[in-house]
Image (cartoon, rainbow, N blue to C red; front, side, top):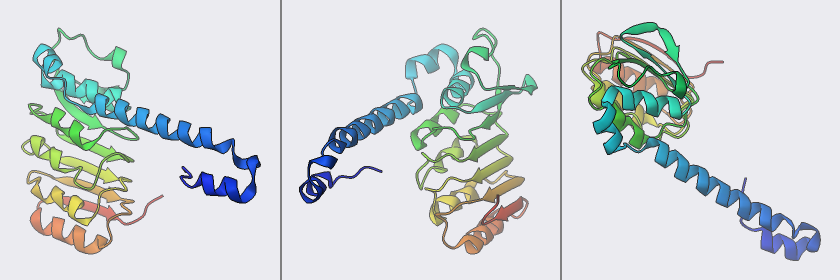
Amino acid sequence: MIFTNYIPLVRLFGNSIANAAPICKGQQQQRKLFAIVRIAFNSVDVSRLQEVGPNRLCAEWIVKNGGAVRFLEDPNKLYNDYNSLPPESQKYRLKVADATDSSIMNIGLDHFKGCNHVDTVILHNCTHLEEDGLKGLVHIVNSLVRLQVSGCYNINDEGLKEIANLKNLKQLIIFNMTAVKSFAATVSYIQGQLPNCEIDAKRFKR
């Protein structure tokens, strides 16, 4: 927590709290720096895209932000280390994107453009996704059949309803979405739009 009112507190309690000011400023600067790094790690590098193609670039994006991936050519192997990714000369196609506990952001989902074989996406504890953070999944609407959205506490009712546009979904898991106020109604709406999708939705889950 950043205490923006530390100057009045100094006046109230004396010099004993004065040393807190540099710490507060340092925290602010550190958070700004982390925000800049997160944006850099989520922005699409056009030159890199032209060099390695969308599947490789998308895999690099997910892994650099703390997630993991699987490829169509080697579906049993989970890659969660940038240095362990297949050589660039091997044109692997992305199949699974697991963004659990990662720092992916809304702008990062543009990496899915051109990834035509992604059938599974896991968005668990993706706390940097904002309320409209699921819109970018439209890039893989034709291939996506399994989706988990959980613990993404900035996504609200309208944001979660974006899932209804993913017409090929067969399996959907939702839980711990604290910003969704009308949970049952939102899930009901999605189910109505996706009648062929099996939905496992729990408001809270340990």
